[in-house]
Image (cartoon, rainbow, N blue to C red):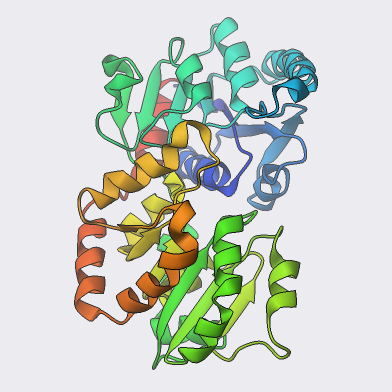
Length: 367
């Protein structure tokens, strides 16, 4: 291995891709402090902010995802893809990486394709139980494919697969908080059970609509308190729906920076079923009600959720039934101590806690 390895990490678009990518980079630096790491993401997406905040350089590509419903809008997407491939080749030629890592998302496609054409070894990290289109296309040239679920041989060559789990944000592990201290951070009290609602960094329309309609129930169930991350697309709509002065048992924010505190404060989580989030729930032993998004490729969030539900490690409410079933189930579950303990025990048993370090070691072996 070179004394100063040069590594490209590419992908992004959502926090579910970005946070694991940063965790991998941090693990590489922990093992090899002089490693030179360059991120490549998509212009205008959240990685262009989050990655520099974590202390790493990033270059954006003008790439965009294909619109599966309105195919006529994809002409511009194809032009952006061609421009991105040319830019990716230039990045590879200038940076001269010894290995390229793809974490999923459409930004990783041009970079890993360019790296493979240049003879540079590539490593894929597949977070979901159902492989994404980009990773399936890139798998043939990849040297290693790090996965989080058993049975991924249906998508990838078995001899390339390494079961690693999904990396999670280090601050969730390195900054443990007591429940009382965490609740105080959100202006809440330790005497009440707490439900955490997460719709991702951008927000989830169904979750937010359901919670807006359930505001009278939240107000009338004063023995339960709520922490609600709306996502930036929905914060104003939620604020307008709240009564003047808000509710004493409800904390609302568009994005929760202190997720370690939010998890420590919560007795039950309501969330979409992104792979990164599920890995965090497993590691922290958080009882969760999953509401898979129907607006993702291959319906992979439902498959992620069912992988837990089949082991009685999570509860599931479909997106279509969330408006009638979600709040009654949440209120009943958060009051059921035995159910919370059973869910916590089962989901914690599925955790793979050292994923970032295991992936980092695989990356450094290729340098």
